[in-house]
Length: 216
Image (cartoon, rainbow, N blue to C red):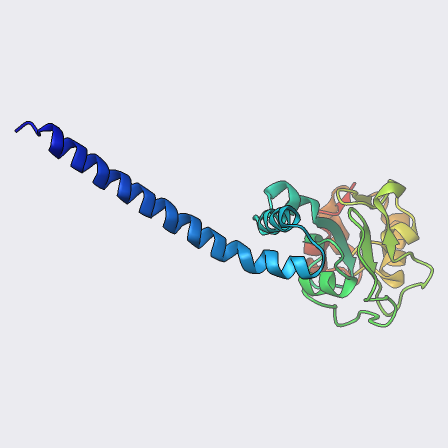
């Protein structure tokens, strides 16, 4: 059924009134949200436009952190020596050595727990070796990535390594390092990494810790 001209005008007026009402309510609610902020800002000499900009900045600050930002806030370190699970660990930037030791399973029972400063802040790409009780205190605790040695991926050649280098391996203190050298002197070079289990004091358990860290 086609509406007459009067009915069309009436419907148009109704629609206009509805639009005006909705627009008024939206503007009113917006002003109620903004006015307390503007009033508080005016007490400190801040203009209305500055207050609005501050609200926008606060909204931006609450946005979720991007994946790239998360990556930038993590570091990777290599923990070896007198810990239960030597390996490479990822931590939050600013983490300290005691957190890395905990991730590595805690200290081994023959660790020299007082030799390292557990409160030190970790450096990305660095290697940290926790000492055993019978070790020489001259062995460095930290090898930074820029030094170019003993970083994650570095493997010790048990046929050519000297005593101090052998002592960088987990569970290999001064006595076991010397035993490896004595074995080489008596029997010649190791034919394979498994042969290190023939060295006195190095059994299958210690070999499993060394497997991925040594070569011949």
